[in-house]
Amino acid sequence: MPDGVEHTSPSGRVPTAPDAGWAAVRPAARPVAGRLRGWGGVAAMAAACALTASLALLTLPATSPGSTPSALVTGPGVGTGVQVRAEDAATCESPEASLTPSGADGPAVAAVKRRGKLIVGVDQNSYRWGYRTPATTEVLPDGRKETTPGRLVGFDIDLARAIAKDILGDEDAIVFRTIPTNQRIAALESRKVDLVVRTMTINCKRIQQVAFSTAYFQVGQQILAPKDSEITGYDASLSGKRVCTAEGSTAYEALEEKSFGAVFKDVGDGTRDDPDLLTVPNQLDCLARLQMGEVDAVLTDNALAAGQAAQDPAVELKGKPFTTEYYGVAAKLGDDDLVRRVNKVLVDYRQGPWQKAYETWLKADLPGISGPPAPKYK
Image (tube, rainbow, N blue to C red; front, side, top):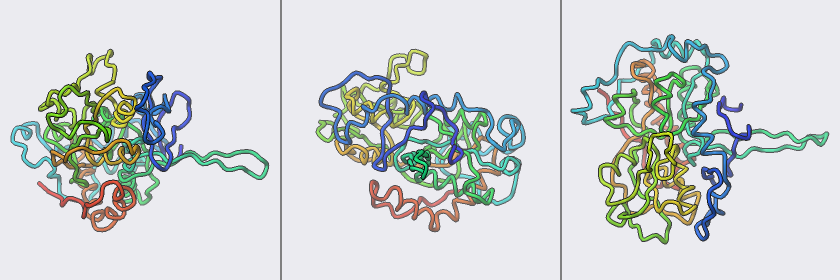
């Protein structure tokens, strides 16, 4: 597959996205009059993408070309240090503080070099962050048609390639594995991926589970709703409204802490009977639910919400961000040398490539950001 992407789809084909963005699609939803609007009723495109992404991690082979099972599961790469101890959560004040940068090779970096590929968990349906461009079809001289699948592109994808280039000398020495929001930590713990670069917020709970790099982007939680909605933001206007979030997200945790009377939990959440209506595997599923009239609003990072609003002109960000959060690159706990190496990459990345990536992918929909957050070290 191009870009080293490993995933499956019910049709066996790779879902593609138009340049203007795309929305996750769901199996045969009931028709809802009057809500399929904006970007041509994106959610009505039905069936494969969101389901594909939610199943992708479970159906991936354990290895990739050039890798060995031991490198992915229990072999070299298991560091001996621990970045954050469990008791730190009780006194956690600066979860975004990370290990000092270093270019030294330890066991985790050495395992990546032996394999010859960096395996990174990413998203393929977050517009501007990690998404797939359309496939292209060329008519050959003999009349046959040759189709080239689209490429994974976006702000997170650029950063992942920069890390691969630093470690392996080639930005294409990378395997992208698409993973749903609620499987990011599991993918690291099971060593299906070396790193997760997937709009993952650093917080006190997560630093007990994974090791984060320094912060590479600042975001805040914000409400996304139809322009004609009476919802005004993360406030009392949510009372009685159905609010969609991604499973395992900080947005869901915010609603657990203070919901303003919103309805945000599915009956059977986290069980086999979970209908994935209000809590969904991937954030973009929420936009599809919103377009189909199955929910009234979405709560997510404003950076992701801005991309969704760019996909559908009938929705908009409501109110103001009510949190300050930071995205980080995540590694398995104990892979200290890999975290230090990523932090070394970020030192250089902040000096120019970050701004270029921001202007390419995010500035049009998320203007006014002067630069990346300053790093904090332990």
